[in-house]
Length: 108
Image (cartoon, rainbow, N blue to C red; front, side, top):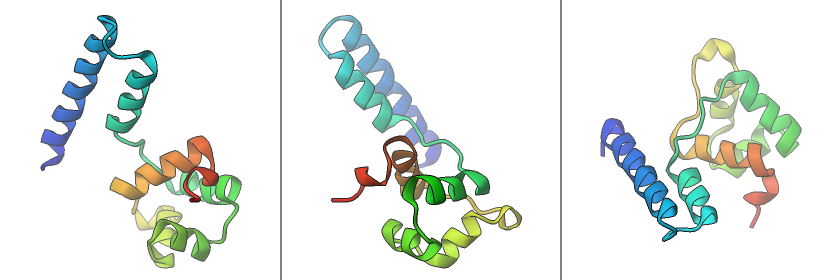
C-alpha cells in the first residue's frame, strides 16, 4: 500500500469512527484508541530521539537499539543531526509509545 493510500484510509477510518461516536455507537474511549492507532507518528528529530533514549528509556544506544530490534548504528544515525536519518514506520510508532507511556509500555 502506498503512503498516500494509507493516509487516505487512516483519515477515512478516523472520520467514520468520529461519526459512530457522535451517534453513540462507538464509545469515546474506543474513538481515542482508533485515533491513536490510525494517526501517523510524529517526526522524530535527532535531539528528540536522544531525549527519549536518555530520559524515558534510560538506556545506552546499544541496549536501546536491541530493544527496538535495530542496529546500534541505526540509533547513532537517528541521533546524529548530520546524518539526516530519522526513524519511520514501526520504529517511529515505538518511539511514540515510549515517549508517551515510558519504556515499561513495551516491556512484556
